[in-house]
Length: 249
Image 1: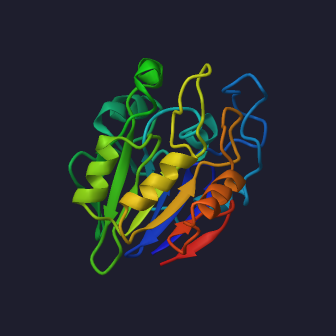
Image 2: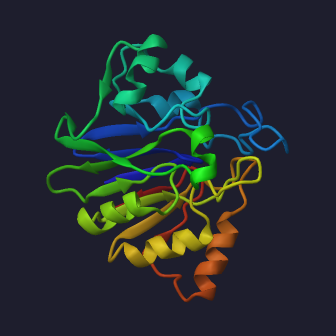
Image 3: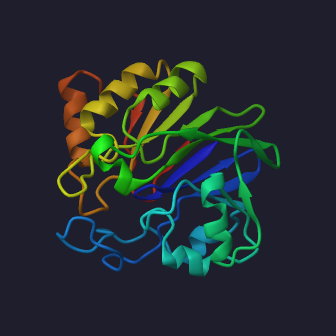
């Protein structure tokens, strides 16, 4: 398996001869929305041209329809025939964008030898959930491959803890920027939640993404590294990749 962080939550996953693109946010630096009023996001450029990023993609996974997870650039640049895999609640909205092959994942969907199912999460504490809406993650597996849990835009909550304990994934990808909405949150994990996820994940490798790219973040890569070092958790199980970095498992 190879995982490549593109930027923020966007990444590619290659396993069992299938290449997946997750939550494409393809806007140029500063060409998207501001989520806090501090300035337009994304805060950084893509690490490669969009054409290069989209080459060889077999399917796109969309966790929810927020603009930093499936933006207008992605909706325009992806081929209409590209398989889009999503939660059932988003299927009609994505079909209305003009995509011809939109598949609701549900409990299990297969593409080649890869099996994908959705997982639940909470996009922040109760006071922001009405604004944030529902989100999902993905559990991705294939014969002779490690099991990947991409938790998505969620805080550490019972739904996430259930996947960690019950499915025992080998690799866990979490979002760790501690973003706020109108001063409330966090909308995704903060540094303390990242550390607790690492503790609950057993022997799994934990990869922290969704960092240093949105204007409503409160946690950086440097913050997480500092907390891990302070708590003596700077182990090989905690990975904080840079944009464009490839991780091989």
